[in-house]
Length: 422
Length: 186
Image (cartoon, each protein chain N blue to C red):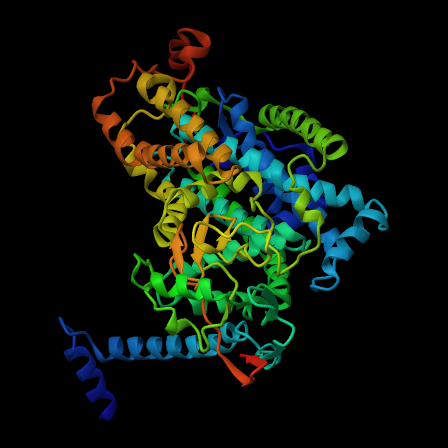
């Protein structure tokens, strides 16, 4: 199939490159997947966030490896070793602030990427497994972020770890032994910190593995596009390089501008001041909150009065995404042609923001009531509204090709061109 | 001859119930799976509390300096243990509430060895925060016992859960009075 495409770049004729490529076709592979990879020509900037998330993963791994060279995973030294990184290690403050805020930037990119998928129906056939792999990445990211937040051994680290590990005690019979096993003792303590460090180092590489599978699944059927109809032939596509490499790099520049602004001017904006107090197992801070990216799930947990059902609802709020491709019964992918779904999409987005705001506030009075309504709406959206919309909504007429909305009648131009199929 | 008999038997076994080869395949696979699971166990078990963690599991407390109505916190297994020298009013209130509507029913008698001394693990049974109420200035909730600020659980003067998301009463650790003024926890 590669034979029909454009000529290979000059460096591929270098004898050394040819010698290696004959034995390990790494250059052919890279050229095929990163250069000539045919991509729909109408992708907008919302399609940047996949590559942005990938780049943030690299930033996190690189900064994290360097931090691990200076960090001591022991309850007596962890807090001070982090402060030493901040004060004594050359550029330590910069690397730690990059790592600390990089986590938030990673989640921003991934959440926008997910909502892009929700708006344009990216989870629909034949991309369900691609979607599943994305949810697995999200779950791994949450686990990694939680484990990493424990490492500085501040008050929020300690009590966040206590609250989250105690979630598992909700399960009858097996709950308490599981929690003791997770802790390696009878409370969050040194064995817990040690294993959290070990796993925090491991999981990002597991994420890399799942990202590779995510990309294999992506390249099997190719990217979706804002119009949501399948590409009809080569005339609907352009090579990934230089068109999308340049578009992604421009987006990266803007994204890094925001990232740098936070790192240099407001590095503690997204953190909790309590985490600069060393962990004290005998004193709970008056108000425990997780990092912002976990707040909506925390709000769901707290809005349900039963401990076990609260825990199940919190996990369920993510696991429900696995069956989303079947809950959404509409055959039209893009919300552009689904006038009613579009309204519910925005309501759902607002609902998630409201849940995040509730998660940051104490569970009492109006906050509790609003939290309960928002939790109910979250599940209602997936379990009732999406299945019914597919039946009752009348979608707008779809264009005949992805060229049509761009070129106004480009379909005929495309038809005049001979198809270059092998 | 034996060779051909085996071949014959294997060939003749084709049908709904499968062949000898299928049996060997499944048996070998099951054996391998069980062996792998057994080899995995030491790795899983290594994450359970180690001998040195288990060895640190008892603590002795001198109760002589405690006043009536005073509450103190001691660390046991890395967790806070509340020791409460209860006033007669608090004891009476706890006993009167034996018949109240309790989410986790337990009499006050079942929770103490001597009514004056209430000893329990000060970890909220919801998600593990330390409830407030040890200091005289702390909020003590609607029932005069303890109040967990994390998610709003109220405990009474016997440490029983009365209101809020926690499912259980504050747990009672193993303890023994060594003499009138000394207690060993754990």
